[in-house]
Length: 218
Image (cartoon, rainbow, N blue to C red; front, side, top):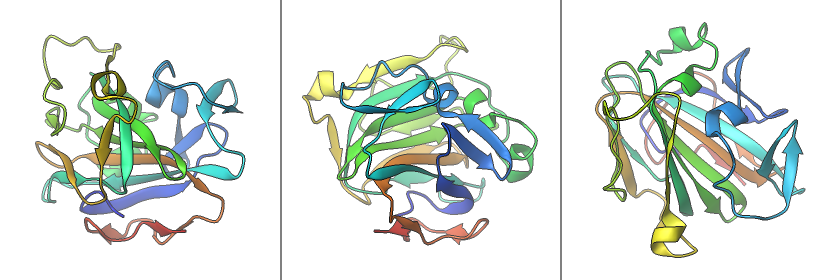
């Protein structure tokens, strides 16, 4: 289900390790996620020179939700899943308005963001909170150590936290609908996840959506 109130910018399958930011503008999983040293060893499938866990019977999917400044600014868990790792990328705070997303390549890779990765019933699952203009403040409620929009951080580097090391092999278990965190104002949520090949989005590009409404079905 939708983790946030907002507008659907783009959705679909991940093709050749590239994700569409908006139609015709792509960014790479490698740039977005950084090195895969946070992955636990399992069979991996190759997407170009970048490897991400992927079962043969599944595909990788993505969905981008834009939160305007007037939208409800908390975000919730879209499914039952286990968060294994948090990665914080200090970065720019450019606008993520859909108009800007059409002309700045890899916008979501330049901006400050918090990447949560783990797994759900069907394999790999991730939720990324992307900062925007004046929105460097991203809170994750289960992670009191996270500090964003802080002068002590260096752009171009990232900061990791392993929930599995802190909490055990399952990491942080979250249920569908639970409140995960908040932005200081509107911003963007990017979901990248593994699902069976018959997974179908029930969305149209540009539509308005509310927390808890269906993104797709199996």
